[in-house]
Figure (cartoon, rainbow, N blue to C red):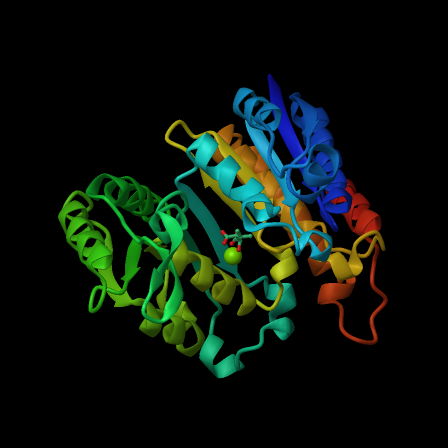
Length: 356
Ligand code: IPM
Ligand code: MG
């Protein structure tokens, strides 16, 4: 089978890590008899440099036409001073909206081989944790009306936070479906003690939970959830929440694994088409040095194979190869102990391909 993948290498370390991920997919293709063809497109800072804007219609069209999108990272200090409507981040938000990617899955799992890097005390971690943050991605205050107006206090900024029942139903059902394939627990996170948006969210979640009687459901306020993630992360299975809370909580969840350079993510639309990218950013401080960890991007390819192409065995093969390389003690600089020899981006990529 042939799969056409649009590739946004992006900025900073993006090109280095995506190159390793593409090579990994090629090896998976050889091993399992698939062809992955890649079409590189520009988005983010590199698109500002080339076209004056972070996201062109051409890039949107090519991403829509592809079977899936692989993205490295966008942004960097070079573009910090461009006006807000032309910032590199706009490319991400624009692609999410244009492709209708309403669900963002961000797994936060502790790799046993990296338990030492976990910043939380062993007695709290216990047997570890395996959390799936299921973040709504194209609604909420991110996509409400933004603006400025004059008020008594002078210029005032505003951003409209809103969720419709239909938006909550669609992300909520997805979260329950994910939970059914895992440990059958959903924790819905909101701020229903203060926000009307959250009250609509909570009422809707309560209505649809009846469709999934096997799933153990709970609600949690977002401030409490931020605390519980460091107090007892093992209590969570699937966390479902809105765009803004999900942005914040998924960073926190990734940090407690101790290795943000390892975490992949998937953003999908109704038809299963997706954009796959590492959770970490473009890391401009180490860009071009060949020392970035490519594992998050490589594991994002595993998510692509599993969720967009239903290639379960192939996805497992990538994940097993990564585990094997880590179990053998190989590390890039971000996850190495101070006195350990760290591998380069390409050496890590090569070892994973060999393990495959
Ligand atoms: C993320 C990022 C983006 C977001 C930024 C870069 C726009 O923080 O993917 O979590 O806020 O969604
Ligand atoms: Mg974020």
